Image (cartoon, rainbow, N blue to C red):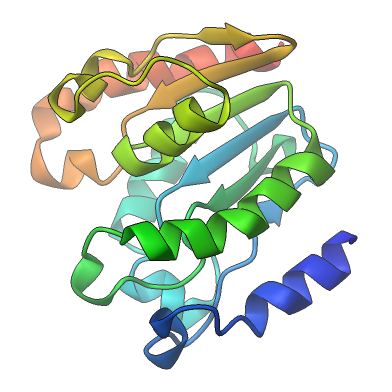
Length: 187
């Protein structure tokens, strides 16, 4: 399966009930030859309406973090763990994760990144499970953010999702410091 076939399959997906409430199923975006792949949780309301990643309030923060880190969107590939909007921005269910990660697995295979960046708890938990890394209790995931984990030839780099700054601006300096490491990992 190539990207064209994968994206068509994602857009037409009806494997769970999320297709009933979404406007768009979001396919990954960016450089398909990127060395770095970022995995967020799911599209927000604005992303669902626009059909594009990171167009809502957290998107503005995300783009600022990348810009200050000297990262161009042309250098990375971005995707989501869950391809459809989660009503009321709720947490994804186990079934929704199981259904959507089939698409994520294929994206990882096609991109074949050397740096895999997970944004937030759910994406990080998925990546740690996929690569057989020890998963801490939920309350300890924040200790993983900003640390590189090497699995064979792949560097796993968990980061806080930019949404965190919408609720706690005091984390900005630490988050920017961690996002700045993306440049080092790319170089």
